[in-house]
Image (cartoon, rainbow, N blue to C red; front, side, top):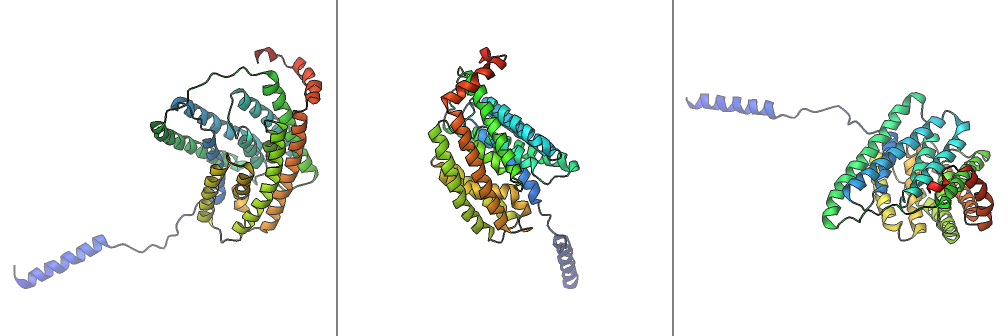
Length: 345
């Protein structure tokens, strides 16, 4: 092979390599995620918060039970979106049933709070009838992802520290499991009735605030939670207002929610009021981020403040009744006579 043929061969080889290794330009747009779909799935991720510090098998059972509960409550809430007259009795039933289960199985905080929140948000979500399977499937996938993350997290943490032993269920009395749950559920329903009477726009936060306040272990705890929730929400709305002034898109909203959730988990066991400051913008993003840009943020912030104050006041009234010996004695006796299996408790 002479020099000219060698140069031709090298040129052909370079051309072949160029054709094989060339990256072609693309005019296709990147598929962007649907923000409203992601927000629904993120509610399913709340199941992770119910991860107990027990052996692995019990952790997985608790996570799957929480995931099933969130999906069930959300389904009932979404269905009542098309039957508004049924939402008050349905939400009252959900609050009673979930409170009973959480108290019977000694579920640690947040207890029944997020189950009721899933039902309330579902009832006031702008969902069309044919979209119900899609939205329920999205929440179910978020719950399953929470179970998977909880499983991997448990494998890691159990290598660092042993699990707490499984304690047998304590001997629970009728008042704690049944009577308290009935009172809590009724006042959650009353808070929603007031919200509807005042014609609040999508007042899902009213029953949630009521439940968060009324679940205090004592009257002092109920009062503290009521003050913390109102004051923390007022400050949190200022934080939310500052965040909503930023140029938000799908990715920034997701990162912001992750940061807020991290801060909340750091503060919730230290000071409830400080945690509410960051819970407020998180819940606004969780429930209303898909509607941001279609109206003024001031309307959303004002609505959340009114919802919180109304729900907290009803929750305080419920706490006064719940921790009143005269109220418990007067109303508890007829309920005990109606309850057929009170001896089982």
